[in-house]
Image 1 (tube, rainbow, N blue to C red):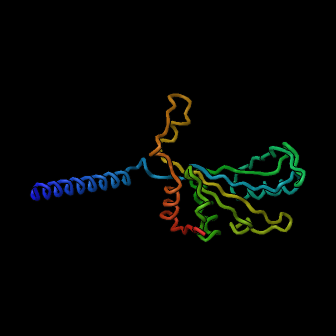
Image 2: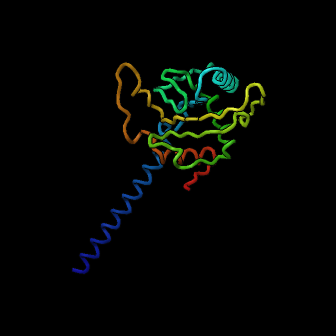
Image 3: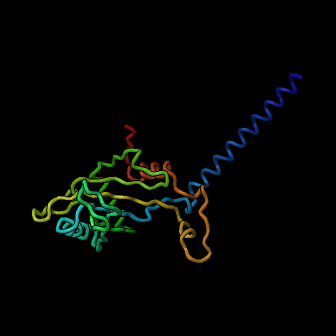
Length: 200
């Protein structure tokens, strides 16, 4: 009986080792798969001044100077008397950047943050964002007539194949395993930029 039980233990141990080696090979294959590579889909830079008029126009000019694109104005969703904001009043300007320009500006923004982000900067959908206090830190020359503006950076990450969920014809669903998670985004940030993630 002892011989049989010992043989059974050896059998299950071998099976477990085989399973672990197989799963390790699968994870290595996944890592090498080009469809699993995470890339920056787009980056949105938002500058909210909380009022329309001259300050908003200057903020839009700063964004245009920074990105080389014409900014889009955002309107207030509802009236807030405490902040003197009326519904449908233009209070912010934003720009959407893609491609190499987005990576270049992301690098500049992270340099200002010294490549340090808090774990709460990352969302469950695998995107992340951060803010900077002064636009002149990005390399723009200070102009006394314009002033200094802070802005928010928001980065959307995705894997190749996301288009199937957005296209008009033969639309499909992106599987759960293929979607970018919070952990994936944090790992990407640490590997690509040698970033530091703060927990406190």
